[in-house]
Amino acid sequence: MGRARYGGCWTRWWRRRRSWSGCWGTCPPAYAALQTLQSTLPPLVLRDDAEQVAAWRELLGGQASVWASPAGEAGQAAASWGWLRGSDRMAALAGIRVPALVLAFEHDLYFPPHTGRTAADALPDGRFTQVDSAAHGGPLTHPKETADAVLRFLAAQ
Image 1 (cartoon, rainbow, N blue to C red):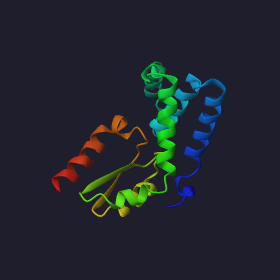
Image 2: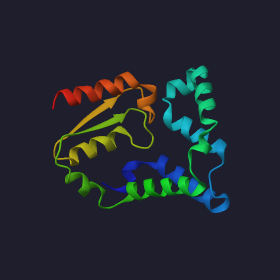
Image 3: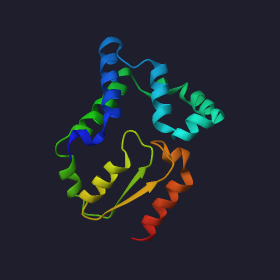
């Protein structure tokens, strides 16, 4: 699977984060909150549900304090980037010998559903399920749909 398959959103985000890290050490908190809102909430919520967006903005007000240090934030971003670009990632999936569920969210900017399908196909016993209308924060914004998908998978084992 080539690098282009992951699209530009992750790449643009990483390049911005890397350039800010070189200048300031971390992303500005307002940008981190915006990035989290845009990736976590589905488009219809962002467009039509000001109350939910406001609640998430309040929740994200303490986002900077969840990192142990600026190095922790940078380290997590570097590890994510390394995994995303790792040449042995797909071979590692092929080595997983137990049933595995790959759960994707329709509007996930980081891991769009087509990448989940590719991962499930690389697993010897992989299953793919998509939660519609959800973004990267699907387990938080669509807990019932997410839990139902996991429970269906587990019941079939």
